[in-house]
Length: 376
Ligand SMILES: C[S@@+](CC[C@H](N)C(=O)[O-])C[C@H]1O[C@@H](n2cnc3c(N)ncnc32)[C@H](O)[C@@H]1O
Image (tube, rainbow, N blue to C red; front, top):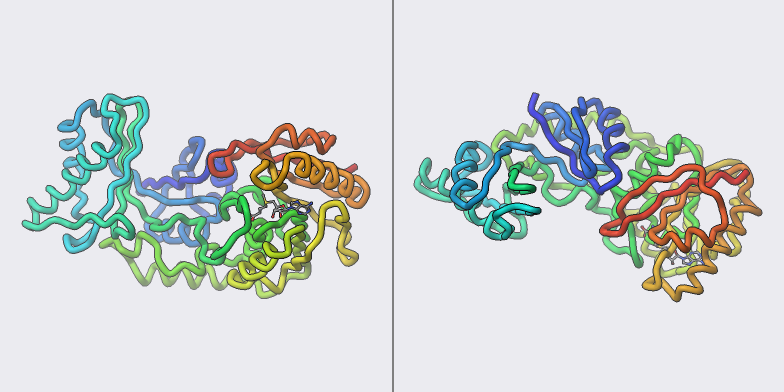
């Protein structure tokens, strides 16, 4: 079985590993920002369609040490890249480098590209063109301590680009991070979630998609693997059909999203509509200072991402948000659990609550804590 790598944000590997196992593929190891798995190409289609936590699925093809350009060039020739695309298709090489003798990532990308196009020229007398925006084949090269790993992409645009979020408020979180947080919270997928500072609605929309078993990739028309020579359209259609068979039409519970900013709620509603889950989420304007339980809800879970920096308001105001939120939790949510993602340790202190669980995750470049508070 070929081996693939599912990349994700730092801190989400553990839940990604569990998700991949639930999808039925055999995981073989994990690193800080991703998980290796074995599977057929049909499995790869399925993971691209169904994984909520992965951001990209790549197929590692070469690993070698190299200290200079010629060595890099000759090692690339050891793998036959002409089997993936036709000479009339386009390529793009993306490189990153850390602590290596060859330090310039543009030089690395150029050497790898040269070796690949020379392979085509030797075989067909023609070479594929480079396309920066929407190439047919993306090749990723990573160098660390002079060890190079080369992989081909199967995804195309990142998997967090589900297609429903055309607009967002300030500091939206990526869709795959929201899904990862839902996994970390161990939410049962059968009960209410409230996000009292929901912004553009990402956490709730991802939760609704999960509960309805709607594939996160169902709105996408394009995946990288569709451009590869070995693309098996019948297998892809089978994967899509199997996924649609699992979909649930309605749920016996609802999701609730509040925000102080009415404008962002309009965006959230539009996003939910595009995702096909607007009938399941009630978005209402409101401040955390006046947050109470919806009358019809007995028990549920709170998951939220409060503002955490001066960028989203003046520091004192933000402190008040945490204090008000903490007060509402203590008074109105006895017996509930609340999970809070914050990138600001001092503000978390303003909650004056003791967390019972803690995870570290990255929201973009920002290291954040995802903390559980049990309102006993
Ligand atoms: C970091 S953003 C949430 C982003 C969201 N998770 C998303 O993906 O779009 C924080 C949100 O808290 C809202 N907010 C700030 N103060 C608030 C308050 N006192 N009550 C309710 N919402 C508030 C802001 O309007 C903003 O939308």
